[in-house]
Length: 315
Image 1 (cartoon, helix red, strand yellow):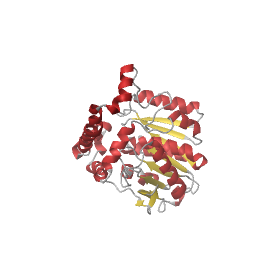
Image 2 (spheres, helix red, strand yellow):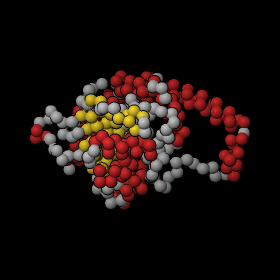
Image 3 (cartoon, helix red, strand yellow):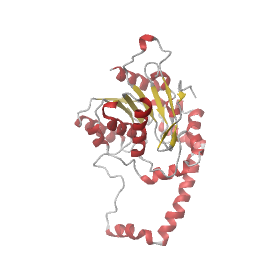
Image 4 (cartoon, one colour):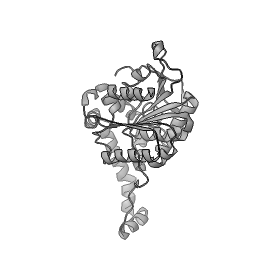
């Protein structure tokens, strides 16, 4: 894997749990490239990924900016405690705390997938401490969408209410579900399955290499990884505020970068339209760029993404 051009930061914890992060500053960059007044940049990965997923972005962005990348709790090299309520609210607060305690100055927060939701939510919460938000195929929901469908017919509603008292349902809930989840988890962390999945997510699979596969497989071997997997999927959504409400709270500029051939986002084109419409309704300073890529454009076509981000950062 290409060098991140970043070093692990000193130990830091959130809610008493170790959080892994890296950073890089333009110390050795040509003097004319430096801008002391430029904001810091914080990179937030998506589901199953880590700081390693920014391998092609940190070396470029750190030529002119102080760049940080963080592993969200439950992922990468960060702790994976089973007792936490994993979801958008937890990761938002983790990112906010990192900016306030470690970076300590206005920061542009960049996020991919679920990291995009955390970036947006944190950017809104930070108010004037947020210098901007960059979303790369961000996950999330809007106020007119339901996280979990509700049974409509009476029999289904009745079954939902009394289900906990039925022995068959208890068998499914306490034995079969955990067993199935374990089997799914064991299968998903096989190197061949990871590679196959990434090759479906990346339109151009050139950068789906052994190092990328290993960067996803390795954290899945950590104690607690399975419990995190269970909790994330049982949550059935990121929770937290819907995106349109976060747009109303955001006070900083917004850059939307879309891999326009994303096979993972449900109704991707409609989702893009909603992001655009609600961002403009919130009177945000927003720029949108469509890219020929899949769900992770920052790693699939890093040169193009780096160029767009740096141009926007300069502006």
